[in-house]
Picture 1 (cartoon, rainbow, N blue to C red):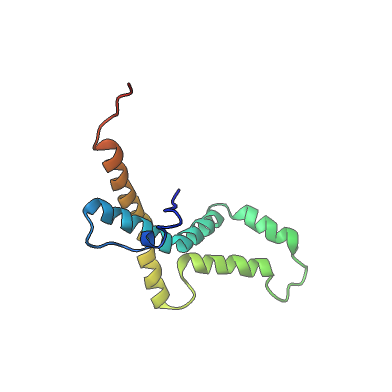
Picture 2: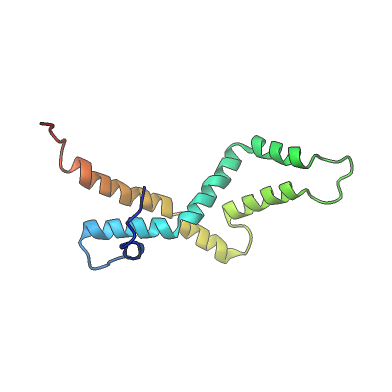
Length: 131
């Protein structure tokens, strides 16, 4: 959806604070979206696991069936446990939880800036008449 072109890609990853509000909104939306994409993507994938855990568990069971005597946790179970820790920021204390809380505001922020761009492009100008 987003690609500024080969010559302008560096400019699109920064924010021009002195621009008019439309350009500032666009800069905020594109820069924040780019720099936080990995976090939002990770939350999306881990959210799929929480919504549908059975297929994930079936894959783990397929590759490493439960033995009658289990001495160590399975690699797949360890990976799923880490996926949960990553999703909720439960791996490095309060500083990571605070960072996750701030990054948790990114999706609503992107929704608002995207809705403003859409409103300004579609709704504000009214329906276009075809000739």
